[in-house]
Image 1 (cartoon, rainbow, N blue to C red):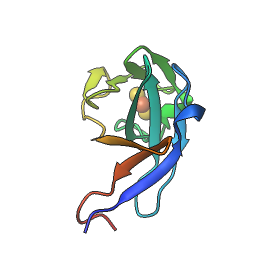
Image 2: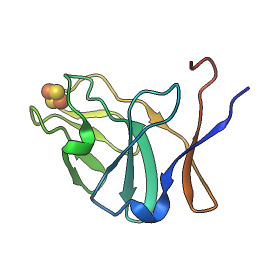
Image 3: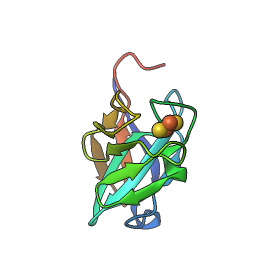
Image 4: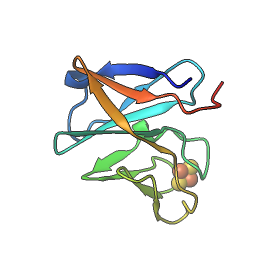
Length: 108
Ligand code: FES
């Protein structure tokens, strides 16, 4: 059974200021506001041990704080070297003002 996980309140996520979020059984997550639309991805860079929420959001791109690699916030696709492997992007639902994702089937 999949279930919705509440991550944080929508009001706490400002455009350009990604927020770290945690949910049971999930890897570290990052919540973004891009022009008023909310997106959620894994927070850990696929190139190294960096949290993307410590990086720099420019529109729909998040730049890693370590080596200048970047990802597309909307799809998780790697955008700039040295990042080559996409981060996971999660479908988002807004429930009662909260940012929610569905725990993927099979996740711990
Ligand atoms: Fe993110 Fe190297 S750790 S670009």
